[in-house]
Amino acid sequence: MSEQLMTEGSISGKLIGFAVPVFIGQFFQQMYNTVDSLIVGNLINADALAAVTSTASYIYLMTAFFMGFAMGAGVVIARHIGACDDAATGKAVHTAVGLGLVFSVLMTLCGIFLSPHVLGWMGTPERVLDQANQYLRVYFTGSFAIVMYNVFVGILQAAGDSRHPLVYLIISSVTNIFLDLLFIGVFHMGVDGAALATVLSQTLSMALVARLLLHTHHSYRLRPRAIRLDKDSAVQIFRYGIPTALQGCVIDLSNILIQSYINSFGSEAMAGLGASSKIEGFAFLPVTAFSMALTTFVSQNMGARKKERIREGMRFGLGCTVGLLLVMGMVMHLLAPSLITLFNRDPVIVGFGVTRTRICALFYCLVGFSHTASAVARGLGKPMTPMVVMLVCWCLVRVITLMTIGQVWHDIRLVCWIYPFTWFLSSVVYVFYLNAVSKKMLPREAA
Image (cartoon, rainbow, N blue to C red; front, side, top):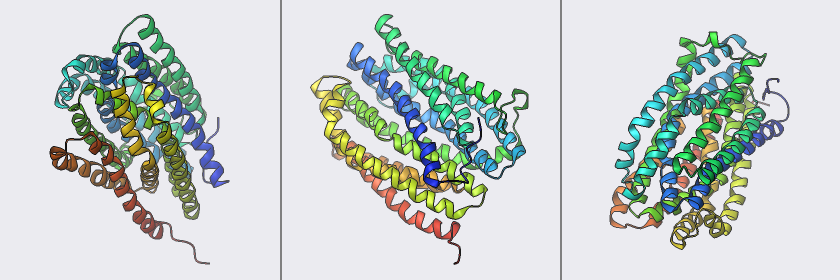
């Protein structure tokens, strides 16, 4: 295995070569997340589906904070690799792993002990509360595997390697589907079986990527005895990681507030909108793929001081993401009834899911633009910008709207429309930001 440096060669080739494996890998990851809901909704009942899908916001909140540090570590490692500084790369790698070990313990404790209180705070209906709590309790016992897998994959992606994580995700996804069918379909374990299947499959993928890092011969090789917190590396990781972590947490905190509003409409609304969000996850796969590719690409080329190359990569990555999301949004809009029916055939549940999907789908290109613009900002070493933009446009606006208009107009369509509106706001801000930062940080060389 060799480092996939993105500082030389075809820009489109490097970005697509990185993004495609990430896209396929995220597809499989989204697939095994969705399989939980599909199997639960069809083999158990609608209340179990509501319990599993309604926990997503809380799970994302818990994981977002710790994953933000993994992304910060990826930026630091990618810059050192772009600058060909092997010593600094090694220190950053082992500091990232050390932080991951600490964070995995914190996530386990917080996830298990806070879950019942958060579910109550969200106004989770009594009929699904026990199953939701049961699912979370099992899920968070696997926090170590979840955190460390993301740290390890972040190291590989910082080196430009997106192919090995793809292979491991495919293996993990197939394992998860098999275990879901075994635990729920054969052993009749209920929602705890779905959570256990996810934990075991995630543990397998973590072990595979750890094995690769232990045996590589490059600067990012993992040496267990070298794991320690280097002060300079930790400062840099926190510098990039804290804004990203806070950004993810605040967004997911606002989603929890939105979920509590959805819960007030009952378990059918919870199940229908939950199914819609699972489908939406597939539409956002290009966002994840090109966001990761652009962060690595921009970080490595900033380390190598190749600014014109960064400009060209930005244009290509943003264009690809927006174009793909336009197409996928139209497909989701047209196929919404058939897609929601896969989760549950109750016409009330299907009606809720179709309403949300058809309102949001045609605006997916806006969320794609905002996320890839955020990735560019992180790669440029400006992690505070996406944090502030998302905090104001996505969080404050959504929460204030529900606390004001939502108290007068108690309608599920308000929840559906609040997303496209805030995606539009952040996109407008990023258009001006990217124009300004390009002139300041990436000036064109005089002819």
